[in-house]
Length: 248
Image 1: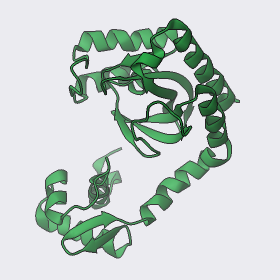
Image 2: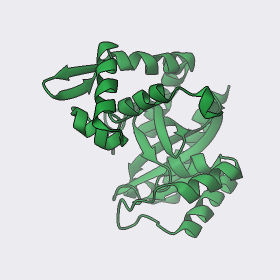
Image 3: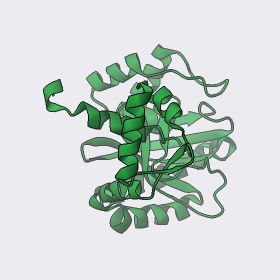
Image 4: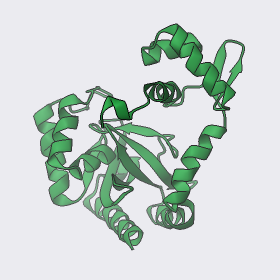
C-alpha cells in the first residue's frame, strides 16, 4: 500500500486513541502530543474532532475514552462469534482447569486478549481482560504466537521488537529466545515461568487463525502449581481439548 492510498490524518487520529491503551485513564492534550510525537496544535485538533465524534470526553483539561469506543471492538467480537460460540467453551474449560483460560491473537509485535474466562477460585490472576495486551518475547502466549508466524514475520519481529526486562528471570538473549520459539513450534506448546511476572507461569497452545491473525489458547497459574509433570500434563490436555473444540 502506497502513501497515496492512506489517509494520514485519520491514521494520526487512531494514534491518539491508541494513547489510551494499557489502561491509561485521563490524559491532557499535552500528554497526547508527547505520546504520539505530534505537535500540540495537531494533537489539539485531533482531540477536538474525536470529542465532537463522541469517542473522547473532556472534563477540564483531561480527556478520557467514552463507551462508544467499545462498539468498534464489540463489532469484531460479534463477527468472530466470541460470545455465542467461544465464551461458553472457555467457561467450560476454565472449570476443568480450576483457573483461567484465554484466547489471544497477534497484533504486530504484541498479543491481544479477545476472550477470557476464569473461575472465582482461580489461584492466580494477572488482572487481564478482553482488550489487554501482552509483549511477545517474555510470555508463553507471545512465544507461541511467534512460533505460529511465517519465518519472515518472525525474523522481522525478533529484529525490531523492543526488548524489556520485566523480572530478573527475563531472557534477554536473542539466540536463546529464538531457540525457545523454535522449540514451541516443534513441541506444539510454549511454557514460560517467572519471565513476565515473578511467581507466575504461562502455558499456550496454537489454534486456527482468526481473521488471518495467529491465535493461541493459554492459561496462567502460580509457578508452583505447574512444577510437577502430572500437573503440566493435565493443563496441556485441557488446553489441547479446548483448542480442538474451537477448531470444530
